[in-house]
Length: 197
Image (cartoon, rainbow, N blue to C red; front, side, top):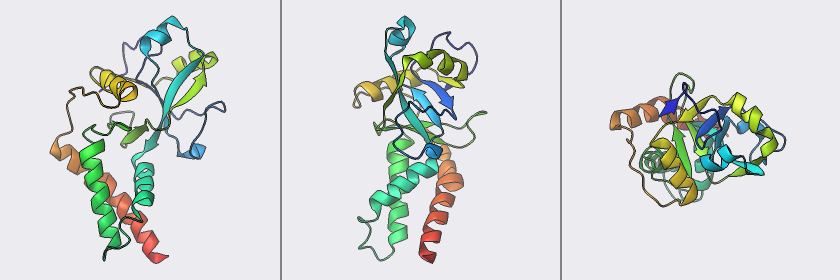
């Protein structure tokens, strides 16, 4: 999914910069929520350096995304006898069906590797722009670059939101591992804390 060697000498669509904070970036969430950014401007535009701005989307932890989904689901599960079980079931199904298999056009899952220790999610609903004057800084800070066909998948998600690109989807065992080791503990902790209140 990623390249760390032989990365282009230019910024490219799909470049990942972790822990990036910039005062010129329009923040939709508290700055501490951000885990980084994904460059989503087209590579050809970045190479020709004919842009005034570089388009990016924020990267969040899976926990942050789950918290937002919980907030959206509270009303929908309010009639359920076991509200927390309802919320957890809906979220797990959404994560499995939409995010982990790249079917949702707004969330781009970044898989775990040597640099990314927990699942991260690019949120394409919150596209922002950084002045092109930061190009060289972004190039120096780049941690990873997406490989093919992940770059193409991101490009289609950004440009069309409905085009399909065939990528290797997560194996069922990978999905279960993320759910059991990441999603369930997050959901259990959040929902348990709320039961105390």
